[in-house]
Image (cartoon, rainbow, N blue to C red):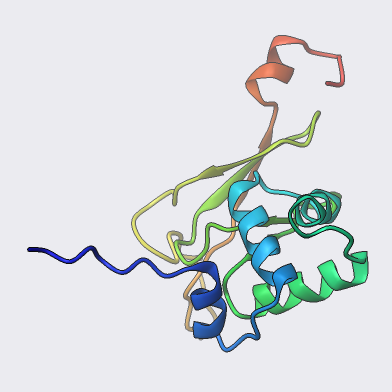
Length: 148
């Protein structure tokens, strides 16, 4: 008889990262992982839907802790507010619509991390490349001139 493989819970992942397990952190990690490149307000709304009232400051603090622990990734498209995602550790890149601001994941352009090699690394030991492709999403391309 085969035993089912152990699947760690969100609380296990927090403990494994050396973080204290709180309802806000569990709700935040679950929210980010089920969301789609959420901004802070979207994360806060998702956390509140799961645990009730939580201050924006508590959300910022939890996002900082989870990002520092490598459980959440913060992306900052130029001129846009930061977004958070649960896809970490694979050095993927992003597509950003100039019109509506939608963000989508795209796998590395070439091979494994850091995916791209600069013409001169100036002695750096590279382990990651962050690329943001800018353009119009399919919906905005279909309706040029309209802000969706």
